[in-house]
Length: 270
Image 1: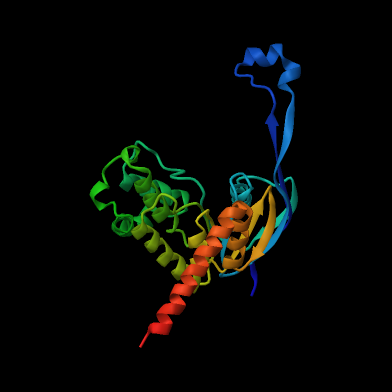
Image 2: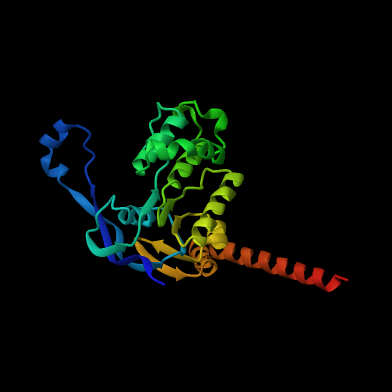
């Protein structure tokens, strides 16, 4: 199976100013202080491949480089070193409602968001009703989205993002503010994309979702990949990293109790 994404030795550095200047005058009068900074490596020598049609999850603690990696894949950032290859059209959902105008209605923003994806008004017109139904926003089609809740905004933004006939879908915590029903509809879309041979990368802290839907998970820490493999194995590694010894012991006891209860139920079954 051919690779949709190939990443080799990817590194990204940001410069963090050490001074706290808030005015131009301060910068001119304290030019030595204003020139001081420290290097922060968001990614360090990251390498991996994603085969076509794979559902890949990426997880790890805050600040580990997950979102930076997605922004490199979409060319929002350029790497400091290393190479990346992306074979196919990409549809990215990285920030809530990016590209939307809060002063426009949901209906108007569908045309705006669709235009950013390269779709004409003629292509969008017959889809507007379907989009609003999928996002459960038919009653609010003429309401300005500045008056929407975060959940309503993410439903609209996600539904517009999946309009693109892209080979690769990149999602950064897209389901964090969606309700259970909307999440299930999203995963119905993901399953359809997989059947169609599309590639999906989902960044998430929800280990249950990663275990349920991902073929494979990358675990990142301090800008590096520290585990790469089947979802359940990698999420278990993440739990071992984050839980204290007492929490791990309590979790093991709880799992053992569940297994014993299940065994007892089977033993008493007629």
